[in-house]
Image (tube, rainbow, N blue to C red; front, top):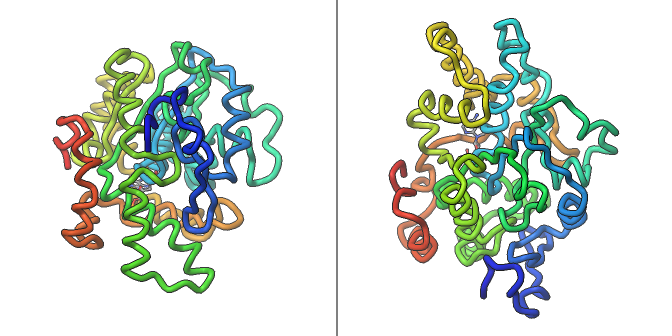
Amino acid sequence: MANSSDPTTLKTEDQLKEESWFGFPMKVYQGFWCLNVLFEGVTSFQNNFEAKDSDIILASLPKTGTTWLKSLLFAIVNRNNLCGDLSKLPFHTKTPHEIVLHLEIEVYKNFNGTPPDNILDVPSPRLFATHMPYLSLPDSIKGSKCRIVYVSRNPLDTFVSIWHFYLQFEISKGVNPSKEMMEEYLGKYCTGVSPFGPYEDHLLGYWKETQKNPKHVLFLEYEGLKKEPKAHLKRLAEFVGCPFSEEEDKKNVIDEIIELCSIKSMKEMEVNKTGKFYPWVENKALFRKGEVGDWNNHLTTSMAKGFHQMLQKLPGWFFFYI
Ligand code: A3P
């Protein structure tokens, strides 16, 4: 896609492009692929959101660990209001997506009915999430001192994850998944045609910003969090202004948060076994395997080669954990 990282230079034909993602129409908007169903929420978020310096915003591409980070961030920010009892966190009754709302999906376009009036009028620090690329965030976020946490993930695992997630809608329509169908979507993903993609533009947009302003954007990798969760949680807590004390460390608070927010623990919670996130998404679909390298079980060597060009555009450090 020509000049996709610069919204001002997008060619007219790009703006007119339409594609389908598992039956959901998408169009190019400011250089990224926006699902039509989210377009209203995206523009309303851009036009109306007033960031506060104390806000914490989780940014990510779909299927890169958003749900996990929502639970970790919420636990880190709210742990001191619980008299030391982490079981008081609301994870047993709500999914992390109901606790930390997506700005363009739930706050400015709500699929579960009308959002409460005071949704933006909550005590600081407010915690929200977005899948939007950095360049398309509202100026009030880019110009504020709010903190943005970005989580990235190996694109091969991200593709396998998004494939399984959207496949559920096709299967419910009676479609039998085939190798050809997977190859078709892999081709789309690798050429940037996926919700909020191109993948590499999204990642590089936040990466450039963290280099310019590390106090504004913290860059995390799913694989790093998996491998060294404690070190990453400490970094995350410090970045959002809620560092763990030595006493908390000694009392194993960090380990408790890691355990509570682990995919194993989340999967065991009743709300995540039986509940529905939106009327059409079961909560259990949010927690599949949560493994690094699962792509090896689904993609052939020649399919993996499709990612070659994309991987070449990523900075060298990105391959540290993967
Ligand atoms: P897999 O499909 O590879 O299992 P997102 O939350 O951005 O939609 O990302 C979904 C991916 O994160 C899924 O990956 C899901 O299983 C995994 N995931 C969800 N909760 C997790 C957790 N608590 N720890 C680790 N991975 C988690």
